[in-house]
Image 1 (cartoon, rainbow, N blue to C red):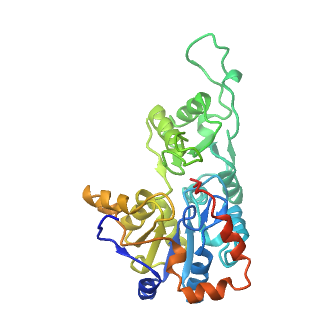
Image 2 (image 1 turned 90 degrees about the vertical axis):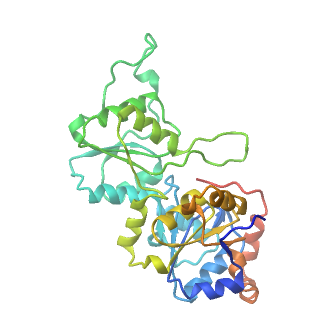
Length: 338
């Protein structure tokens, strides 16, 4: 391994750090779970922290599902049921909160490029939306010209208070054109879930675009800069601060990506820890140090969350437990989600 300034953590050294932290913020995929399987040992660490009366928050950049769905997933994987919907933060929830706090009138609608997770969170606030789902080009163009020179908009410009953009597999030229035209009204907000360029998948040779390219396309076509709410951006941090009275100096962000998780923590004064169970490794820390990207160099790094739990605690927690069965599921190749 490359030599880096970040401090390596194991169960013994973590025991000396944990008393300095009141709040632990965890990324999800690659940290708490591997695709649809539990990350070995992670439930044990969460239980340990809860027994020590630590606050545990889950912060993911995935807006495709709602917080309630993620809570069900955590419970299914064997996590403590104290970690429920109210302990989870994702861009869908922050988008809904951002729109509500913006003073979006009840008479205004949201043009949505996004999936069910955003819809669920908007529904919780009673925010009206339209535009999600398929919108085929054939319904707007007969193919007689290269460009679509005119398009019928479902709502008048003045009735649309925001355009929200996230990942959506139905994104196409029609949706791009509609979003760009609604955003010509300077009073219309442009809010984006996240700017992740790609999403990892089972074939490393296949590029899978995430929300970032869609957000960028609308940005270029409309000439508008979005408010991006996901990590490493500030809206997610401000949302957490409104929900919980955290002390940044006594809060630790733990994730598997230096450019989102570590940067999020560094930018907002948190302690940071990179786990090597997901995307980025020690080589990435070394590269960031070499290129003086200090905002992506964590304070600590660890093999995984399970490695931070004392062995005697693991033995006690696993004895007669279903977690043993769940851990065996994670022996398949790592297929992370956005």
